[in-house]
Image (cartoon, rainbow, N blue to C red; front, side):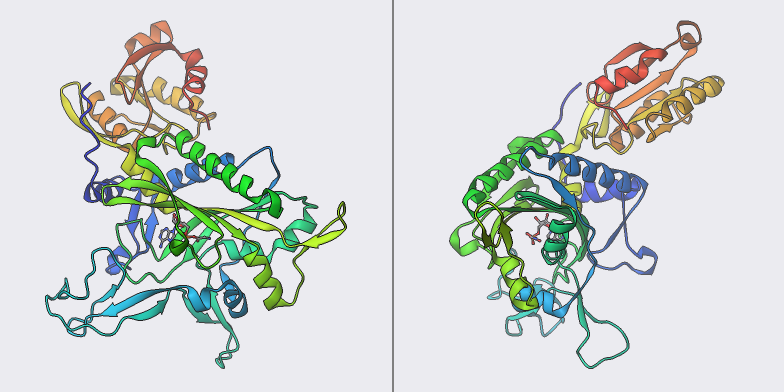
Amino acid sequence: MEQKSTHATLDKIISLCKRKGFVFQTAEIYGGLNGVYDFGHLGFLLRENIKQAWKKSIENDLGEIYTLEGSLLGVHRMWEASGHVENFHDPMIDCKNCKKRFRADDDSMDINKCCPDCGIKNWTEVRNFNLMFKTEVGAVSDGSAYAYLRPETAQTIFINFKNMMTTNRAKLPFGVAQIGKSFRNEITPKQFLFRLREFEQMELEWFCKEETSMDMFNFWLEKRREFYKNIGLNMDKIRFHAHSKEELAHYSVCCTDIEYQFPFGFKELEGIAHRGTFDLTQHSKFSGKDLAVFDEETKTSSTPVVVETSVGVDRLFLTVLFDAYYEDEMDGETRVVLKLDPTIAPIKLAIFPLTKKLEEPAHNLFKEIRKSIPHIQFDVTGSIGKRYRRQDEIGTPFCITYDFESEVDKAVTIRDRDTGKQERVAIAEILSYLTQHNITK
Ligand code: GAP
């Protein structure tokens, strides 16, 4: 097999996602909505597998992890406390001629030049645009009931810190993890799933004592590196970018971004931040509720420090697709293949009868295996080569062919997606073969 290189471009990934039902533009039949997408069957399964892998990756020996599902709507005061009302904005500029809106700090933007859309130079002043979606709750419209769709999941963890600590009888250090939707009214959503207006985050807020916090920060950096390695990303495309003082967000003591080399450059995939005591202190101040923790040993009260790890499901989804996309040659044919790690591949296995005549016994085998591995497919149409290509394109790690010999030797042929190698395996041994190759539920 000739390994040609990834050849992944944004256009190819978008086209594959649509063709195979991973991702659809939302409300496409109405013209769409910029920066918002729907996920089809394969997209849903891939997301679920990414989330499962993330949940597993944060298990650790230092402390417990508790989970929270916070609300999407948050009160005005909470977002004032977090600093989002005052600070969560991007510089925006409009073209007065074509009315197109741009982010003034975008890499591709130069306000000394003409508008890239209409070619005329007639800009407004640069002004700050708050990225939160604001709404009013209830029937009264006197401004007393402003609420915001959350722009990050983190704050719902901070405002529930005491609830989580007391109900779980938690001891420091411990973590609160959350996977959920966040919303940002991005001025220019772009690069498909990279910058969205509605997206999902996987965030861990790790509460610890001040004196251990730098060790904890370094611990989580390494844990996160391990995660990307375990889900099979090409680690040559991953780099860590430690923020300089000027780059730090208003809440951060220190911060490192994990960046991935996309075709459009190295970009942030995940942020790991030492947030100090900023969030709990602010929420104590604004709510009037004490969020400090009393230490029975030292008989003193102090506010825990937070180390945060935060990655977008959608951005990671796009990353694994870029990373897994290859065009290579197999059996003299060019093919598109997603070399997804078996743990995150949406479909784990496909089963084919060699001919229609063998459909019944092959389908019985399919039904049997599906009891242990639910996400598998059965395909009878087209040549075996065509069926392989269909599965390669969606990243299915193994294909089983049930042939006339199978009736006699009670064995099947299992073909490996990446090498094309075929092995004869006894039907009774299929499940243990798959387990050995990381294919489980
Ligand atoms: N609580 C910290 C926080 O939200 P962030 O750097 O703004 O920090 C964390 O976001 C992660 O969320 C990013 O690294 C990225 O993976 C994802 N993310 C942020 N904004 C996004 C957007 N508009 N579209 C898709 N993913 C986004």
